[in-house]
Amino acid sequence: MTMHVVPVRVHALWRGADIDAAGRATIADGRLRVTLDDARSSPLEVPVAVLDGASFDGIVLVAYVHGGDVLELRAREGDAPTALASLAARLEGAACALPEQTLSLRGFGSERSAPGSDHDRWFGALLDARRAVADATTIAAQLQAFEAGALARYAREVIAAFAAERHGEAGPHRRALQHELEELAEGTFAAFARLDVAAKAVREGDADHRWVAWRAWTTALGRAFHAADDTWLAMVPVLCDPRGAGGRLWRRVLRRGGDA
Image 1 (cartoon, rainbow, N blue to C red):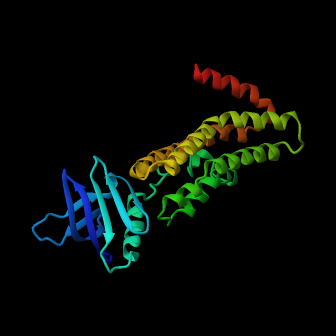
Image 2 (image 1 turned 180 degrees about the vertical axis):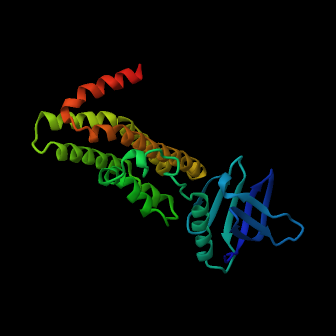
Image 3 (image 1 turned 90 degrees about the horizontal axis):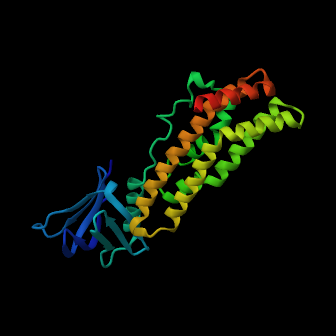
């Protein structure tokens, strides 16, 4: 892999010392590294995973290190800031790579969860969003793909479709099934609401803690995947119950007994 090295002017508060020097910056092996032209000085190096945030205004790239250190990088006099802009984009891509969300799910894709068209529809919006950001390198693209309001609307539409497909005529049986499925999905809707709050914290937060907020958002996203997984496992026996509305009372009794 080609290592992109960018000539920069460094202004930094680093380990309690003020630094003002020429240097070269690069990102490699998950670390931001700034090598000063003064051979007597040690490189400034930090794992991107411990950066609290960063900002780039087209001229200055500022990286905020957990603990209070700050690295301010500018293009050298006479150099265009294009290379620095590329470094800023690669820094965000390295620090904010979206973690895998489905590996620890119990129901997703497993035989015990009766995978099929209903299964695929229930997880459809989450999986479409995951595919959409597979190659995304910006936080903005990730937040847009997993927009919580759209995920919640999709889930409600799928639940309504499940009920309509099992009770062709609108009426009390269809409404009862839809209500039951919505009750089972309360945890998923609550997780989407928390995801929305976490996304707003990322969008509206200050640059020096934006990546901290992003990490909290990824935690909320993981919990949304798990909530959808739990909901699906709870819905399977309801969707597969040949008694239709007649089995609803007994399912309620069994759930109350299991909660006791």
